[in-house]
Length: 316
Ligand code: C5P
Image (cartoon, rainbow, N blue to C red; front, side, top):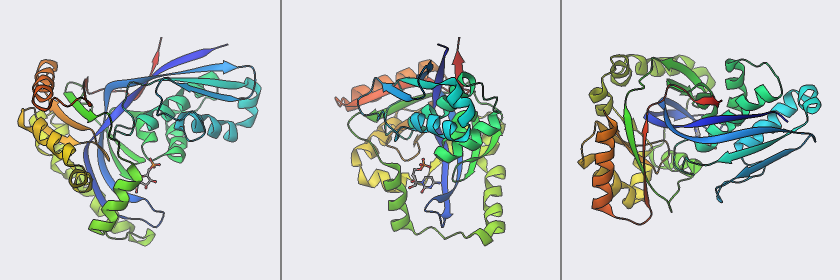
C-alpha cells in the first residue's frame, strides 16, 4: 500500500489583535503567523478497507473523530465519496514533537498534513487553495498550517495574505509540561473582561478599515524590511491579558525570558508557550541555558527552532 510522510510545522503568532466579537461565537482577528521548524511527523498509509485509523505516540492526543487529522480524513471521504471509497481507507500515524495545548497549532497542523497527504494518497488533485478552503471547515488555524511561511491572517484567522519570508530568525520556546490552556476558555474570558465591540455582517467597511491598519502597521513594515530588532519590538498578543494574570508562573517565565535578551518575547496564540526571538542559533541556545538555570522548574521544557518557509513538507 502507498504511504506518504509529511512534516507538519508548528506556528507562532508574532501579532494577535482581537478586533471584535462575531455572531458565530468566533472573534474577528488580525494576526501575523509564522511557521517554525519544530514539527510533527504525520504518515498516511492506504488501507484495503474503507476505514480511518489513527495512532499517536502522545497519550494526551485523542485518536478518535475529535482529532483534526481524523476529521480531515472524514471530511475528504464526505466531499469525495467516489474517490475515497474506491481507494479504501487510511491509517494515520502521528509522531508528536509539538507540545499539546500550547498555542503552537499542533492539532491544526496535523489536520493540515492529513489533508495534504490524503490529497496525494487518494489522487484527489486538489490545489493548495482548495486544501486551505477545506481546512477552514476543520479549524481557524488549519488554512495557515497548509500554506505555511509568514502571513497576515484575518477573519477568524482563515483569510490569509502571505508576506515575504523571514526564514533566518531563530526562536526559543518554553512551556510548563503540566500546564495547557484551552483556546475557547482564553477567548471567552477575553470577551467577558474586555467586551470587544460586536461586529455585524453590515459593518464590513469598518472591518476592512481596521484590517487595513495592519498592512501599514509597524509589524508588517518590520517584516518587509527583514528587520529582526523591529519585529521583536512590535510583538503583540491580546490574549496575554487573560492568560498571564490567571497563570502567574507563565508571567514569571515571560519575565525571565525577556530579561535574557533576544529580540523580543511574547506568548503565542492562547498560550501558555512563551517564545523569545533571536538572530542566531547560538544566541537562542544561550537564552535557553540561562532561563533554564534561573527557573530550574522540573516541568519546564524548552525548544530551539528556526523560522520556516513551509507549513507542510513531504519527506522523501
Ligand atoms: O477554529 P478553532 O476550532 O481552532 O477555534 C477554537 C476555539 O477558539 C473556538 O471554538 C472559539 O471558542 C475560539 N476562537 C475564537 N475566535 C477565533 C478563533 C477561535 O473565539 N477567531
